[in-house]
Image (cartoon, rainbow, N blue to C red; front, side, top):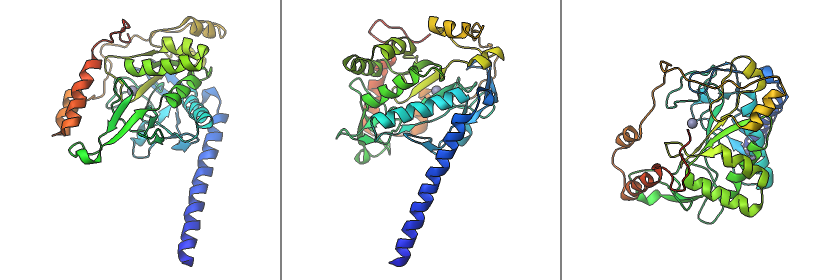
Length: 320
Ligand SMILES: [Zn+2]
């Protein structure tokens, strides 16, 4: 019994020293100057001359260690923005955790399974999720349908382990709002499925968040791939980066031009070279073939998904 208590105390002290290490890492990250990173070129053919790694864990976020450790680098502005926004959600609605997936490689450049993510200014994050009782549950890359519901299928051959989830609208909105209103982060674009965008804006209208709505209305759109299981966020070049040849993708908003003008700068528009080196990406068909046999509900979801892969019916267009 004594041994068990001693082991429990040891486990608790290891956990708290890990938390302390994360705290120190985050404090150090917050103290860095903007020269800690340098993004050159654009998201489709750029690189990182200097970069920072996102910590594994912090208040309200986690980057799972099993998730490609080489893909945890970005600009200091983006990484700090993610950490601050996750903390803001954690303070406003305790209990949820932002799960961060791929950023860029340490030096940027082509990265397997992504077209972009080359210049340290792109990141994939999962949607905050709820269980069927409305409690926060660990985010997974479940496909979310028009009502925001989805299924974590786990074993794709076995229907008995399916776990039902739903988009956590308030937390997901709060995260995007915090990022969009963070001047240092420089959020440019949020790629997400049109139907999830609709749910988020309906919530924001009820909550009365005009400043964030105005910004995010321009920033959010569905690209040709659906983004119904994660969001892809893109960030602007920092003023230092612009000076060193960093290139932004379209669109450049009027407020962005005005912000750069204060530094005596004009944005450079990214025109990816047609002969740029590309990493291997996996098409939906290849992924489907690799998955092997699937149980009937998984097949039904993949079929349903096709309906929102077509251009959104609201008259809005795909992201350019
Ligand atoms: Zn992405």
